[in-house]
Length: 509
Image (cartoon, rainbow, N blue to C red; front, side):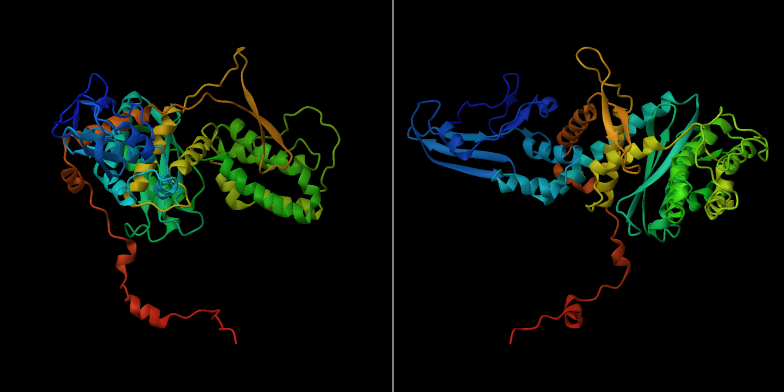
């Protein structure tokens, strides 16, 4: 006879013949779990709960994290005990499914997580099992929740002209990236509205990694317009492909350039010039500050912005009126004396070359007066947590981790500043990487929330409950062929025969 032992809550029922839990799936993820040593488990199951006699020949069988104990006591009472419930529908061990879900939904690297568990003897699932669960249940759950949240956001923006900020993030540094995630942020609510993944070689328009950003923006704008969003403006970096696409295909959308990206490129040139002309060093930060001021005060008037920008060539020479264009006179008060530049000095001539660069003057006309893309940089930092650049992911795995980063970022986009117990605002000191020795203060935000994870776990268990593992796996999206399959693959034997090394090992004489 089966023993009446039950590891489930009192409100839960378990089919004694199958071990399948009923009425508990909705709270499987919330129930506490424990790591139990085998010796402690044997002590627990050593005696029969019916007659108290010793259980002989106690055997354990392990499937991932699921342990099944079987034995017979001296009075022939049979023991069959499972360490976790089985999810009805698929019959999967709840712990196996939830562990795989937890690894993906928290952004863990699968191989290192499993290696960590194995290193201390914890029985766990294999990498292959994880990827099978990912394909069958976990990825569909992510897509389901992402589309649900996106639909709610679109409804909230239905009657607005939405200002968008866009930027792309490659999956690896340098020019060897395989994937790019291009994301657009709705400025009105500070959340990621849509993201598109681009892969090198997916179409003739994407022959290399450099061309991915243009294609990513094109796909994003098309998708946003299909969602019914009315685009008020678009702010991006100065990527040549992006500029060309907007000029040619989206002339009706005002296109602005992010000031931070322009300032970053400008600062590199100024730093390079200051190595030859040290007198320029004290002016670099002031010039960058001037760029931000010009963008804010110009309010999109191209002629005024250029006139204000070029006024700095007079300003650094202690001339504060008579500027060319609409901006005729500096607005500042009387300044303290400082080391001004001579208009005939090599340092000034080098500065003038940088400031009057035709490409820079053309782009400065489009400096964004209000919208900036710094929130997208924050999103990319979140994405790095879910999809580190040091690790390679499959196409659907990369897409799912990008959606996870969107869910996390959007849920925590409006976190307020934290306060002490006394009600005072909390601040932290930050040092600048770009400006050595320079410190600023930043607001300490409230701790992030992870409500989306609970929804994802519920979705995954629900999918597992209503379809068998085989059905879900077969219905999953078919993975595209690897790019390397486009080329003829030589045999391993041929490559071994042709193998040479630049540093042949010499046997000791």
